[in-house]
Length: 593
Image (cartoon, rainbow, N blue to C red; front, top):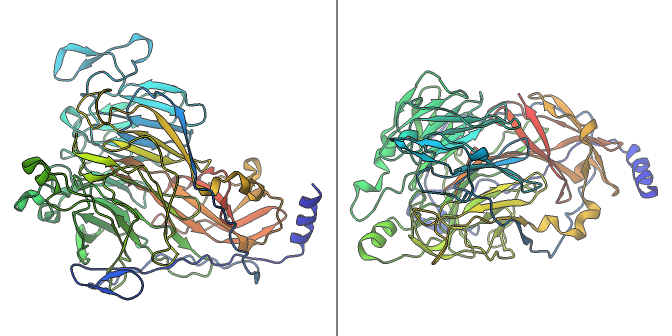
């Protein structure tokens, strides 16, 4: 208490505002010509683009001239624990709700799961009216207690898309069989179950990708042999608006010799100017949702194929919003995958090729955009790429050879990688403590408010199979990254939720009250806001992390300015973290509109 009072007295003398937390920006790129410029391998190229980024015109109240203290250091490489030995369902899809419940869904046609529906209930089997199914294919998972509640799924969500609506509901779109044009909604209320409506979207959406837009609606791209996109509202019925997209046809490797598809579950990211970045296979474009046209094609990414069944990973790197009105720089990262011929070679020649080791970064708005390439410490296909409270990224799960699909991969990659975007090339990756559980096809992961990573799923078989190599995985793990080193707990902020703002308005100031024994200035903090993604097949849909500068820190209260628009922060729920010199607090749920 004496330390705290002394710190508060010291802080009361300060007249501070936020300082910048710069990222290394602009590692961009093109196709097949590479040069080394000392920043990693660079693929040259570019195209014209006169789009502009949203800016934050808020000006700090006071002048903070303090110098940020360095981040606390740790040698802790993380640790794993089994959170639940049997969740009942293998988590093909995973979405965290603002109720601190994680929704895990699987296909309905894989036979019996390991958990039955509640109260002895059975559901009719679609297409087979004389048959009933008494097994659950989705569960609500309490991330704190590990308690599992079985859920009813009425149409098949196998390889579907999804996202978190403005009111915190899960919307699940598409799938296969009777579910291929369905919309399923699960509201964040106690005891609620899925509501389901078939034939809502215009086209079959199987292996499609979904991204949240600035107004809270969604855009959904592709699907197996479906070369179009459409707009999805947060309801069970809405007017259909389908847009043909020849680009998805052109990127389908079924069109070339000795290759299969490689453009399913394309990577989709909302950019700060409201346009859409879309990468399918190894080509990328920018699409205007106002005109429904491709406004720019970006350089081709070198190295191999990046989408299902090659199944790499992608994320929009953290978006830094400064208080000086500087334009927000958006950078896309794509890692891992497989050679274009990998699936065909396995099918026709029974040869399993090695996964890719490379990552590429590109700044789509740069007129001379190029792919800056670097290598991971290990090969990976079907991995997950998650953004962390510290504005770092975590790569985990997946395999080192093969492709996505039943029994089509081997050599599980058990070692997570911590990626620090602003570090120099060759200093960005750190190998962490390995898991002992293979997480390959149909696995998933999610960042939780306490900073741990929930890891679930993995089923390389067309049924629940518990014998032989890589059996169906029902265990749920939690991974603690290095920033959760117990030694750092003395420096960890604690958010006082009762006296903090949980409802944010675009461009307006808000306050977060914290408890912290260390003496600190505003420059020693950053606030990060995570939009929890829908994760499946190695891709976290609508994942977004915003980095905010504090305006001031006075008497234990941090004042900051909310993101200026839905282009940067689509409306809805986020997890807000206070990060003190690299040590994050437990996150607090906030809603912005």
